[in-house]
Image (tube, rainbow, N blue to C red; front, side, top):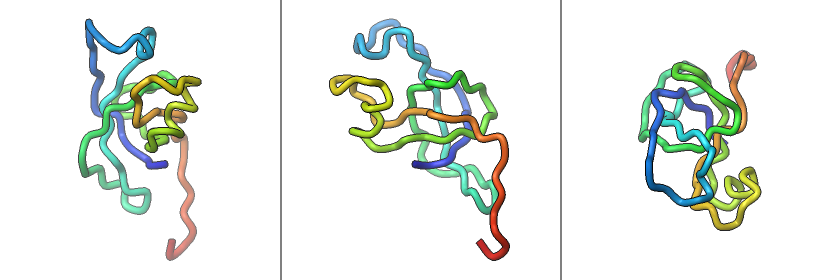
Length: 93
């Protein structure tokens, strides 16, 4: 799993039927220690209704992502499964 920040949405008129009714979000990985948002943008299926600017928890593994969608055939690599309200880090962590 990774932590990321939602930076946008993606709409598609023609798509795999497994994505019907699903929201697709653009997410950039976020470092939990310093909050820095950087890296390659990830396209993720949003199961929780996140909005732009939200910090989210992403399952980022093909087979685990498909399990979240209850589908073995939907071509999803990343799925947003939670919106982060707060992070507490141990001193020195």
